[in-house]
Image 1 (cartoon, rainbow, N blue to C red):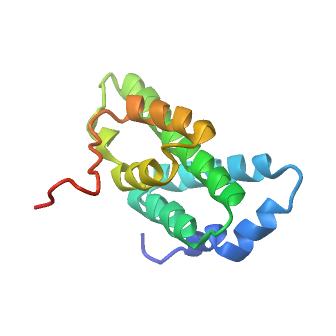
Image 2 (image 1 turned 60 degrees about the horizontal axis):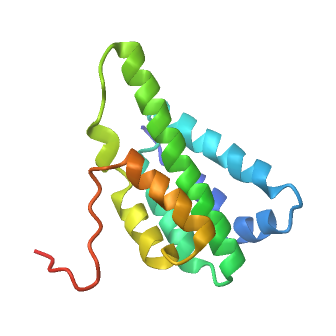
Image 3 (image 1 turned 120 degrees about the vertical axis):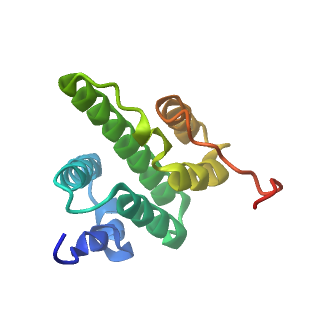
Length: 144
């Protein structure tokens, strides 16, 4: 990590708008997922950076269709990351659960924005099964 890597730009609004015009955009979301997971594995970026990229673009997107696609893509990244960690743990002979608190901010943002959206809520449920240590604070929960 000797230099800043501008991969956050891949999820910039101009790029997201371009992706949304493509017929086969699911392939692009999947390619970004593979890229982000590879960057994390090679320790070129951290999970919280990927989390922030998705949160940032979700905050900038104005139309619901795009927001839903980004939400689904971010859930897919979280689930793939969880699966990769489980596989790595089984190869090492260790059951790794420390990662299960990662992506908590992204899960919180997704829950607040998409809990009533049926196409996203099923993915969110799956994410919460994979990340059981994540605790979502509601708006009326006390914060220390």
